[in-house]
Length: 356
Ligand code: NAD
Ligand code: DAU
Image 1 (tube, helix red, strand yellow):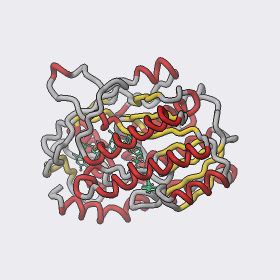
Image 2 (image 1 turned 90 degrees about the horizontal axis):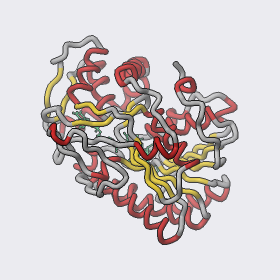
Image 3 (image 1 turned 90 degrees about the vertical axis):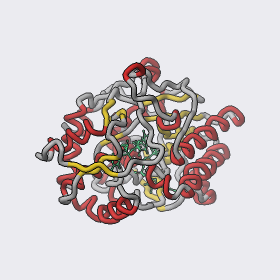
């Protein structure tokens, strides 16, 4: 199945035609840029990305000539207000889709400052620019702003909704919650037409090897053992990255200003279960892993109720079979070693220093 076959043909028609996508060289951002450029021939995209350790220019390579001609890549920082202003004006941007962030919890625990700088200050700079140019602003956020849910069976039906209280528990999620608060305030105070999506854990191609699924796959592929934090019973709610792209597209084009929409695909699984599937896909024994030091403050469970997104905008996840999506992801990493090999040693060295 190729990307376009898997997506509901009833996607919203574009309301905005010149998008600025921040963080468009990262995992979610690059998937979103491909999603848009390959489906909507009348939409142009300017990517602004600082190419930190997590961003790669080649994540946007390989587009056909006609598609690539509608992509403009700018290597720069979202905190650079003069650069942002110049791009908005030059490329006649009519909407900002803000993906850029420091995104990895473990990094935030051991060095929180860049998270405050990029996630909070960077969002502020973009909001101010959007205000000056009267632009539509879509903010990409995370379910982690709601903290975590208990693991006991009696609360198994509890899920996050748009009404859940903000209770971030880690430096990363606190920085994302802070940015959400700024976005909401710019709507209320200045009338900026904003929307926010808070999404659960994505999986799929182009995810950095520091994250759980790619790390385990590439550990096995490089002859290391898979590494499970703590008991391995923590639960994440997995969604294929393409489904996230479609949801953001719907909210950008048809969402109501000032609103928050949660994105999730009923993909709850504990880490041991996910690892079990990876080991099976790579022909390993189910117990071929080691447990390592737990993440301090490790959130127990995330679970999303995406009812508002479904009932209001008609979005539905298309990748409903997690095992199938995971097997395709394993295959992608197996066949794209040149993409991840350069990051692997440094990522593992950093994890080893943390006892992980
Ligand atoms: P990522 O780390 O893969 O990519 C982040 C991108 O932002 C990189 O390309 C990086 O170079 C760029 N960037 C970082 N700082 C920048 C700066 N100061 N200026 C310009 N560019 C900068 O992250 P991701 O997993 O793709 O996450 C993207 C967004 O989605 C983040 O806002 C994250 O909070 C959110 N999110 C991610 C997930 C997930 O499962 N990955 C789930 C929910 C929400
Ligand atoms: O919920 C959305 C969030 O999902 C996003 O906002 C974040 O940007 C994204 O990184 C992700 O956060 P998590 O902390 O849930 O993802 P991570 O891949 O780091 O870890 C997933 C789970 O796996 C978590 O319970 C920790 C565990 N883990 C992680 C690694 C890297 C392990 O057991 N072993 C590992 O080696």
